[in-house]
Structures are given as structure tokens and as C-alpha cells.
Length: 275
Image (cartoon, rainbow, N blue to C red; front, side, top):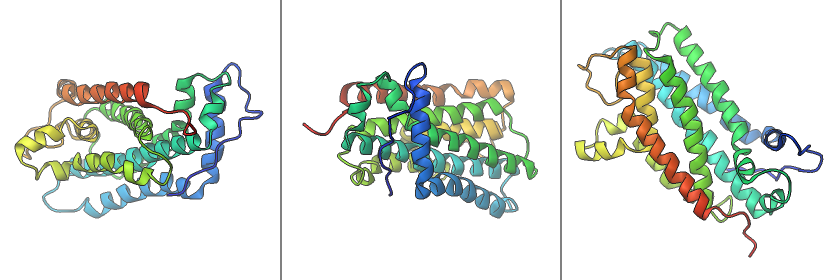
């Protein structure tokens, strides 16, 4: 995948808001890369909506389930290919070219330098999510049981997959190697899809439930249909209040992965390759 040149820091305006200045510089570089712009706008929006409209009249599939599947596909595309991979690629490229090390001599704190590359993709994810949700529910899908669960899934997905990108960069030598080092996280995300978990043996499915994308999938399903993603078809949807009770394990899973990735970043993140 195509990588981008390091942002220019001269004249960025470090001072009161270094994160804002860094984020603007990252956005300008992101916007100039047509490949990442297309990946961040067309694929996460077009593929889920195409799938939604192709399956909405499928017999035996409820309207709420079709909406949930469309939202889940958007989440997979946005969190994995927009959020995770772009952060991994950008941070690795910046480190290899010595940009991260130079930025540490300025006013920006370490966490601001690490967070800035996630901002452009996060904005695209939020905008894309708004478009997909608007089209799906504007097309007549049943209203979500708990819209708050969908918002939580969006915010949590951006945070967790950005942190996974930072953590993976600690074991990635260069941008080309990111295509290899990203594979474990990508495989883990695909395994968390509802369609995959449904065919796994019960014991293995129970383990997969504790992976980050499986947790996000459950939050999306609870918000859209009122039940967990892998619940039986005969399971009755819960009400708005009941969804908060069911959110316990998905939220605990995301909290666990957040702590784990922060620990890896704190102990293994590298600022310079030139030793």
C-alpha cells in the first residue's frame, strides 16, 4: 500500500495547541495521497451499502439483521483498513525518516505526536459512519434499539484500532513490512465477524468473543437489533434498558485490549530506527 512523505513541521504553529497543529499537518499529507483518500472514502461506504441493498429483500432475513450486517461491514472496513492500517503505516514511515525523533524536540508531548496520525482517518470514519447510518435507516430499516451503543462502538473502534496500529508499529521495521506485521490483527478482526463466529465450535467462539472486533460487532448488533451478534434467531430482542446489561462483556473486552495495547506502546514503542 502507498505511504506518505513526512509532514512539514516548519511554520505549523506549535504553541498552545500542538495536537491541532500536528493533526492539520497530517491531514494535508493524507489529502494529497489519492490512494488513502479513496480507501478511506469509497470502500468503507460503498461496499456496506451495496451489500445492504443487495440483501435487504432476501427471504428469511429480517430488516434489522440486514441493517446490522451493513453496519458491521462498515465497521470492519473503516476500523481495519482506514484506521488501523493508516496509523501503522504513517507512524512507521515517520519513524524511519526520523520525523518522530525531531518532533520530540518541539513543544508537542509524546502522546500528541502518536495521536496526530490517527486524526485524519478518524474524521473519515466518523463522516463515513454518518453517511452509512443515514442511508441504511433512511431507506426504511427499523430504528436502532439503542443508538448510544452504535456511538460507543464507533468511538471505541477508533481508539482501539488506532492503539493497535501504534502497538504493531513497535514490531514493524518499515512501511513495506507493515503488510506482513498487520496480518495477525487483520485475521483476528475477520474472525470476529458474526458470520465467522456463527460457524465456529462453541469453545472457540467463546474465545473469539474476547477479541476487539467481536466486541465491536456485539455492540453494533445490540444497538441495531437489541441482541448480541451471535444470538440465536429465536432469541427475542431486548429493550433499550436491557441492552446496557448485555454490553458488559463487549465493553470489558475493549477495556482489556486498550490496557494491553497501551502497555505494549509504553514498553516497546520506538521513536527512531537509526541506532
